[in-house]
Structures are given as C-alpha cells and as structure tokens.
Length: 564
Image (cartoon, rainbow, N blue to C red; front, side, top):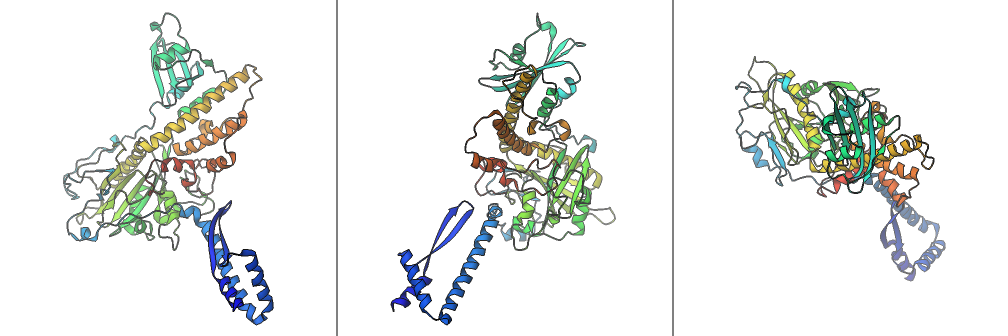
C-alpha cells in the first residue's frame, strides 16, 4: 500500500513557472514535499519492479516531458511576435448593414479621437453624373516637411561663410552659421537649437561695426545667454551641417494598401483577404506599377528584395521626384492559422498613412486597425457609372486622428473622380501631404524633438572636437564621422530611422569619449535595432519597430491596448 501510494504521488506533480535568462522554464516536482527522499524511494521502487511494469511508466513520463519541452520552445520562439497581438474592437452591429439606406465610406470611432472629411453631417451627392467642382491637378501642391531645411545648402555652401558652436546653460548645444552677402550688403544668419532653427537676414548698415557671433545669436533669440562661441575650422563641416539641416527631408515614402470587402468590419477580416479582384487590380494599376521584389533596385520601403521573405511582388511608383512603395496587404505573406496576420501588419501597421479600397458598401471604422503609427486613412470606394460613360468612378473620404492638422489637396464637391489620371494625381499628393501633416501630431512631434536634440548634441560635439584637433589640440581625440551625420548622398530614411540612428550615435559617442554607460548590458539590448530601415543599404527584411525604442516611445504615449 505504501509503495502504491508513492507511485500515485509521483504522478501528482506541482508546476512552477520561473523566468530565466533565456525565457521561461517549466519545473515539475513530485507531490510529496520531501523532495530528495521521494525521488530516491521512487528510484528504488522502479528497480525492484519487473521490466514489464517499469516500461509503461517511463514511456508515459518521457512522452509527457518531450511534449512539454516542445511546447516551451514554441512559446519562446513565438513570444516576440505574440507581444504584437491585440484585442480586436467590437464589430459593427449587423442591423446597421441591413437598414437599406446609403452608408458613408467612414464611420467614427465610439471613443472619438478622429476627424472625417467630408463630415458626416454634410449630405454628399455621390452620383458620377452630378455637377463636379474640383481643383485643377496643377494646383495639387505638395507640402514641405521643413521649409528652411535647404537654406544653408542654397545660400551658404556656395559662399564664403563661418560657423560657430557653443553650449548654452539653458538652451543646450547651439550651432550658428553666418554669411556675408556683399552684393546685397547684408548678413544671413542661421541659429540651430534643440527645438528649431531660426533664420534671419540683417542689413550691415544696422551695425556700426561688424557684429560678433554672440550679438547675431541674441538678435535671433533673446534667450541666448552664452558669452562666447567657438569657431568651426573643420574642413568637412559644411557636409555635416547640411546633413543635420536636411535630416527631416526625405524623397521616399511608403504607404499601406488594404482591401475591404463587403461586410468586413474587423481588422482580422480585412487582413485575411488573399484574392485580388479585377476591380482591385485596376485600382492598384492607378497607383503604380507592379514590380518584382527580387533584385529590385529602387526604394524598397523595408521590403525584402533578396530572400523573398516579404512576398514576390509590390506596387511602386515615382511622383514629382519622389519614390513611393506601397505595402499591399494581399501581396504580403499570408500565414495559415494566424488570425491577425502579423507578417502583414508588421509592415502596414508601421506605416503612417494607409489607403483602404472598398469593394462593397460596408463602412470603414476609423480605429479598426490598431497601431501606434497609423494616423490617417484615405478610403476609396468604386461606384458604378451609367452605361456608355467610360470606366469606373471613385468616391473618396479621409479620416485622421484629431491632432493631425488638415491637409490638401481639398476634396472636390462631390468627392468623386471619373478621370483616372486626375484621380492618381490627387491620391498621390494627398498621401504625401497626409504623412507630412501626421508628423505634426503630438506623438510624432515629441519624438522629432528628441531626435533633433540628440543629433544636434552630436553635431556640436563633433564640430568642436574636430576643430580643436585641426588647431593642434592633442588632448582631444577625433572620432570617426558619426553614423547619424553621414554625407547628403547617403540620404535619409525618415525621422523614425533618424531617431534610431541618433540613439546609436549617442551610445557610440559615449564609448569614444570614455564615458561610462549605465547598465551597459540591458541598454545595449534596448538600443540594438536594424540599421536604417528604409535607406536601401541592406537587402534583408526588417523586424517590426516594436523591437526598437521608437515603438517604446510611442507606446508610453498611447493606450495599452494599441499594439502594432
């Protein structure tokens, strides 16, 4: 009886779950709390019992342990991608779809936080034969991301000028550039601070003598308190300064493209679409051309052009000197058994603007796609035209988070396009302006300030150090050209990539200056990200930005239910 009791207790196992250096570890202990004695007694009992009795027990235990081991491995391997999963919003109630009345393209979120254009309270005549008031495509202007970014390149680099650096007790690092335009007898000045750059032009006749760098800086900003600037004499300083000034300017854009079929109300349904109808293919042909990703040499928008891990095709176009890559959901990899299709959402969920092509009359909910990055959706619905009047017509509506400023081009009244060439011009201009406007939202603007601050700090330190070395100061050791201040020819991948680059630069600078880093082991894990996601320098696929500090920064400012 006592032996049977011990055997029964060996099957009664307590399960403890602990965290180790490489993830979770499952431990199994016997039901008897006297650990060593119970294990010894069980071993003796197994030795005393015949082989025929021992075999089933060992086989069952071994199979159970193997299955549990594989379960643990599967959990560890899937933990990173599972972190991106989220709870779906409640679906739109079906009675709304059976009212028989015409539904708008977009419905607002129950929680609010989005604006819609045209507003829902404005009755819109969507008939393709109605009077059409629109804007000439030539007036589809594209917004400037930073209107003063190229002033230094246009007015300073071709003229004799001087640059100066300083560290203000309250304003932080400052970089000043001064140019004398003798033909106009005036001084052109740029003062770079953490928040912004200030630009001014002053007539030389205003000053009895040539003003100092401190006087010019205080004329642009009265908060400057430094009493001295250090002159920059590094020969490659203009390249570094130009790269800093233009770090926000990028000729490349990437946008998501979703297909919403009739009665699809959730993110799960929309991302699960695999087949492309002829109408959807026609819409994609309006956006651009379908290209093979293998060996593609243009702007790839984070897609894999070497190993085929992000699909074999994509839609690409160029527009007014800009390259655009579309992340089309139906062309991205489809994963069987994954209801959220994270291989698709890792790209579309990390775009800032997405297009939604509706096949049917089911409205799109403003917040149906959960993402830290997506701030704007442009929804397009194909509508029927009268026979003999040509191709399809498209109705357009726009929704964006409430802190995104309005942007052009203005929607025509009614918002219907019958000419496909004008429709393409409008859509591409609207998409680019939407992304530029989204950068002014609170989440992105905070991130931009941090990025600019870090890059400016690095620029000031590098200009000062290299200038001192040029003058023979051996106490300072020149460091290699920083990754965050590369030459203009290498381009910019957008402010998100600049943010990641700035973090790496800061860490690199600390190491070169001999400054000890805090919690080096944990910090290195945090700041380790893929290098320049959209710069086309690498051909492999990119991880989802949830692995970077970018998403961590945004996550601190958003609802915990929002996942990329």
